[in-house]
Image (tube, rainbow, N blue to C red; front, top):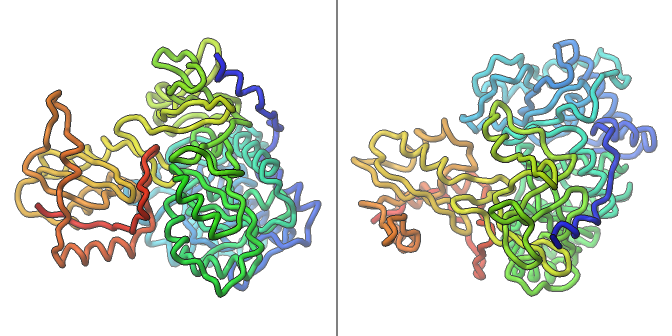
Length: 529
């Protein structure tokens, strides 16, 4: 039972606070401090609060009350921050919409906030569409006082990947991060992550409850981000582990990054070798987290003080939630023994939208440990009390904080006429689909067929045609044999690859796996026989 004892360090945080209430408390403390910066625009805490209040009152007139789902489809901008706060202040729960993701089901959403030029790109929905730019003249006539809403900490705050996350979970998360990272009103955080990922709420919410500032990036090119860090004296940046090699190759010596004090990483396995190279190139304090959407974000924390004797950097110690390593009978295993990771605590997610069966499978009631979330990750406790993630369960992987069931991609491929067999693997940079297909086909044709069923981050990065799937003596697919299929040099395929590179910035890092060579970005292509 030793790994149960490691959770005695858990700190209790207030459970009665909503996210927007924490922001409103900060507005009272620092009304004239700069809250948000985007290009030439700046808003103080007071100005941001007034604009968010006006939009919140307008949303309430449209029928938004606690538990109402409000979509937001807005580019990174000041309007995006105003929209997020307004949804929460009105009592609603925000749902980030990716206009390029044709698989999203928006039928449960009542209102969608967007900008006029994005309106036509939103997938079909019965929701009211509110273009906050063209309708701002009407919105600006609303009251600037904080709305009086009956929202409580147990109400829904947002939905991410169909996961229902309550205010109490997010509020505890942000307060824990504030304490762990020692965030003050002098800190400036960079926002560069899509709203469809839970890191975005860290980047935006953390400075806004502490009196700091959030600087919004227009694009994610490392050289441009480094200029932004230097220009605005950014102190804290989050990067996914798969982004670090690119930053190592683009250290812009023409700008000063002396203000940058902390690098946060999560969502993928972090190579010790890459991490060591990074902190040699950038004099920052490195903090690695284990982040789970069903736990409302970060669960454990590891600060790099010296190089750990491991291939991958540990994810650290539990704090606001409990982390258990259990065997197949759901009994705790001894320290050092691998088992499946379970998360427990009061701020677990509520469940999944319209997926009661999945909720019952993933969220269990343990006879001794209470409500637990079954992560599907294999890990162990070190004798010093920190957690190591060894790998994801078979046929699962992570892409920038999003768990991928490879079988779901295979099911989508098998629904395409002519595809007789399909098997998907993940390497260090992208997903590969091995297919047995009849007739002539192109990657674009397959893409168009499956993009209605899969979000963009689950689209294969390459298709490899095979005459049949090789099998082991036990009758299972031989993954080692599949990995030996060669890459074609066909010029058409290279053009397809270049287009995919322009269209996507998503990389993949299978849990527990790591290449010691720096990986180049490998976009979508057809790989021939």
